[in-house]
Length: 100
Image 1 (cartoon, one colour):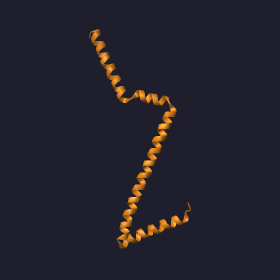
Image 2 (cartoon, rainbow, N blue to C red):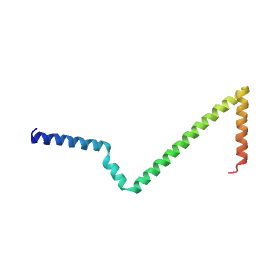
Image 3 (cartoon, rainbow, N blue to C red):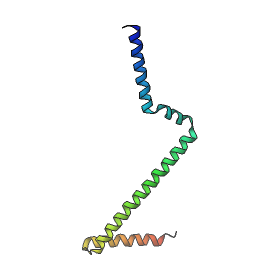
Image 4 (cartoon, rainbow, N blue to C red):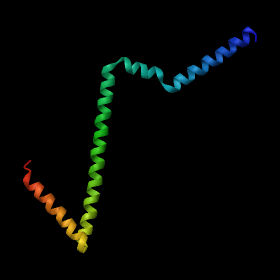
């Protein structure tokens, strides 16, 4: 292999490695690690948004379940109606005990 071919091979390998590093965004990640306050801020923001998303999702899910239980309770089914009435009594009792 001639020195020119070795140089071309080395250039192609280096160029490919540079492109892979650019795709992986190594420089931006390193820059982020070098500024700890920005890293803390981004983590705080992402954690807050994640918590808000979980809270909203659970609220929507719980509201859907309560709505379905109300519809089932309105049907006056013998077994399910008694079960739902017990749940409603328990929830009302818990609400009366807590003073916000």
